Image 1 (cartoon, helix red, strand yellow):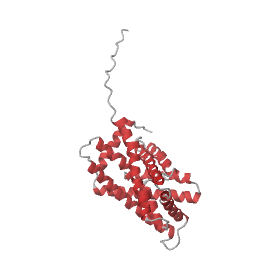
Image 2 (tube, rainbow, N blue to C red):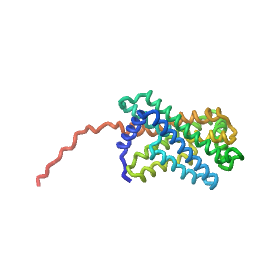
Image 3 (cartoon, rainbow, N blue to C red):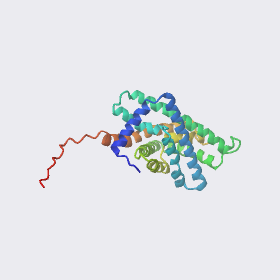
Image 4 (cartoon, rainbow, N blue to C red):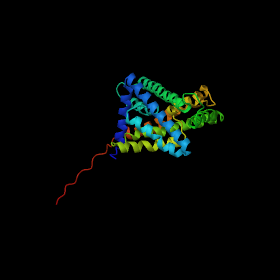
Length: 278
């Protein structure tokens, strides 16, 4: 599978972070918009598979198709830039400042939101025949997800908020591992396998992904979910964004950069070769 060693793919992570920091506003928004849309389609697909088969594991196994496609096409998710761009700042790449990093994060957030909302509207139209009939079974499930993962957390108060935050941390631990997975191999097959495994894990475990939620909750609101916009923002999206930032940067970006990107060189003298007298 043309495996790439950690020291080399960590260098690729820093290079990628630097490139994203300097990407134009137009290209950042386009790539982020398409990433949000493709991931939302994958989430809609996974929910549809789960509802129609009754098997959540099957939906989780198929969801990564969207993630793999969007990264192979060079699109950007907020969860990915949370991990990669700070490394370019830490590595002191010329011109990559904290302000430029925040600019990238803001643009990617807006682009992801636009793409996810577009698919949310499309899916709401599809499952209601243009809002002319009640939602079908997939639409009802989308509405239930929005309720369970906002009001459901709120019912537990501070403990619910803590659970939400930890699920968001664990989500981007896995998602950012998938982002790095695309750099672990030089072959298409190797990249897909390395990305597929952690993404399946995050989705099946019900962890909280800020961009997936940009699709799930707006579509749930449009389909009659028993929660409101404030519930979504306070009891899901905002804590999820913060948890995703902590999870990806702490458990993936900083760990890999510290141990493979900034490892001190071996300063021991080279062994002296002994000539043979034969």
